Image (cartoon, rainbow, N blue to C red; front, top):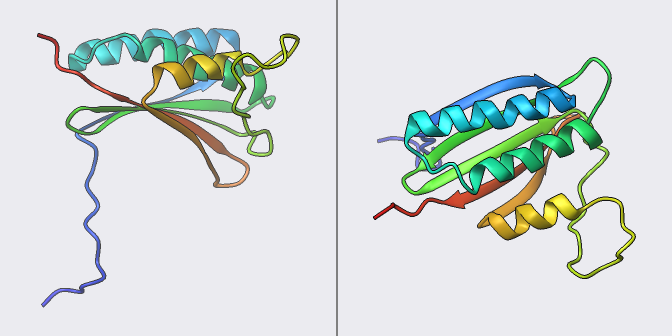
Length: 144
């Protein structure tokens, strides 16, 4: 008889992960690579492409540490869900949820409003130190 406390961990159905330079060029490359990968999986490009663009741009702008990259990970953890993760090495700099209609002079947080609007779920996972991962999940609707 097996251990009743043992959990079954399932690997994602599909997974793609790549380190990219924390620069504008790296953010642009993240969007292009994501579009290519999603297309090869037969996953709709939008709104995933926009979510990747925002998270990668945030990693390049706010998560930049000289000499360090950010990591883009795309996965399909189960039927009907696409998970987008962008990890950077600025774990001490967590994104704040922007308030819609908030301070018109605020300089940041607007991209996360877009992510919040487009994603079905999103959040931040801290660690391992010094990293953080901003993730978003999209429920995939079969095309008719």
